Image (cartoon, rainbow, N blue to C red):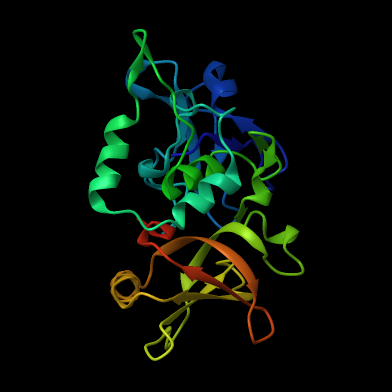
Length: 254
């Protein structure tokens, strides 16, 4: 399920779902993931004008773990306040350790009405920010910032020739073989997912959070993971490290 696709197999001509509503439903488009040969067709949500692309033919499905296959990653821009979004503020907020009671209270406050009108909030969670990034080509902008400046994935890898620094979301796979060190409370991931050029080191201070994330990664060894971090060079070449303060910084893409 994707908000954009390509008209050609070489992925040179992008088309947005909102532009494709006038296309014939049999018109073929190509998945934004260049490694995925899924054939996409334009669809609408429950007969509405809110369009999206989907692989409707069983002969040409998405490859396993294609991030554009899951409906869970669909982003509805109409539900959020783009002007109020600050990428750095949102990422820094994920670093804060919040009690469960505070999280529940914040969730209740989201969407409160003011004078009878819905109060649109900026995107806040890691999954929301990730879904937004995947709904647009990496050269597009959201709230005045290019997508490629927010996320390192296979699409934006060309931009990260010298490494990954400062606040970024990283789409990664588990390091093959031994992927954790209990003594130092570290977990190792590889990104971009196609080349695995860089090693990303997740450094934990809290034993409880370390154990939870390590177990989650172990259980989902073949899945993709997204990590929100403030990255800097680690001890080894092409290694980058970030502190993980909260489980809100790491999610499994299913």
